[in-house]
Length: 332
Ligand code: NAD
Ligand code: DAU
Image (cartoon, rainbow, N blue to C red; front, side, top):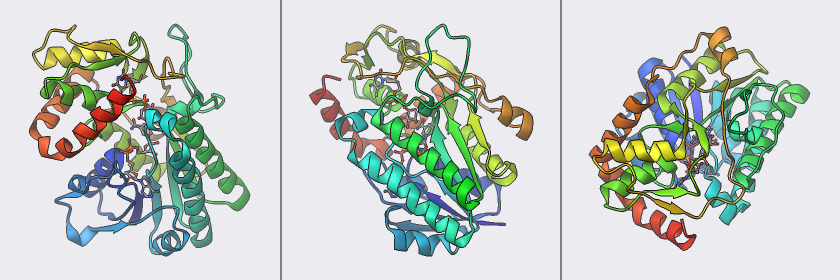
């Protein structure tokens, strides 16, 4: 049994990770979360009090981070500013949280010799052409496009430097686009599902030819727990489930699943610098650690996600109007 510090545990992937750990291990969890607009206390309801503690605070608070890290066996670092569109509107919090926050955690794990796992994204590799036969792999050069992905790329490089120069016991993972329960309604799939529930037409950026490599959040988190327990120190693992879909197809699937005509959506302003395609080669994870995704059928996973948003309106309703107002102001 270990004691884990999970940063960003009130966000989408972090909260699902905490539930996953409770179900699949005996570990105790301390969540550190600033509760920005993206943190949701309801995502952590019902966890066993004997194994779960919540601390509201900022990963940039060196004193707090030092104290919390001194009392755990490992840190799993999810906390971040995570939305590309927000990073285009105001990059500053992305630099502060994603870079300085990671630095603060690295200094604390270095001081207390605590195992560290760093959660990152496939966006650090930039994008692929639609017809490129290559996928991203562990040695693909970094070429981030947005302030968000650049800040994540920088944080990955900090981790590698602290591992090499100071011997920090770190692993990294770079995952593709997650979907599933408890994802903020600013993100593509929940935005469209909740739009349809509200009688608003879904919004497709540009022509919607952009491809994302979708993975269910539970499959991402199963991989993270496996890497934490059995990953090779110093190693990077790419996480992806061969889930490539273009955005237009995803919107049409959502509309069809929800009983609407497949073409009942609007084209809106494209995202500046919009990455065309992401695709992950997860061979190392599969071959070295024996990981396999459970959600192999995207349509079935999407249908379950639609049902989750239908059944949990109280979870997302408080954020919906403000998110749509912000997008409307950008012509999106
Ligand atoms: P999210 O935006 O849903 O959640 C982020 C959480 O971090 C929130 O609870 C927020 O309150 C917290 N947070 C933000 N700034 C903080 C700070 N300074 N101190 C403490 N807590 C802070 O994000 P997500 O989609 O769950 O992403 C989690 C991690 O996974 C991020 O590092 C992201 O880069 C990475 N990632 C996301 C995806 C994806 O598809 N969503 C894919 C690959 C990697
Ligand atoms: O690839 C991993 C990344 O996936 C993570 O690192 C990020 O944290 C996460 O937000 C996600 O980034 P994307 O920018 O790919 O996700 P988003 O949900 O914002 O958009 C997915 C695609 O859908 C993208 O091509 C933009 C498009 N889109 C998005 C919105 C919100 C639309 O067409 N319409 C929309 O309304």
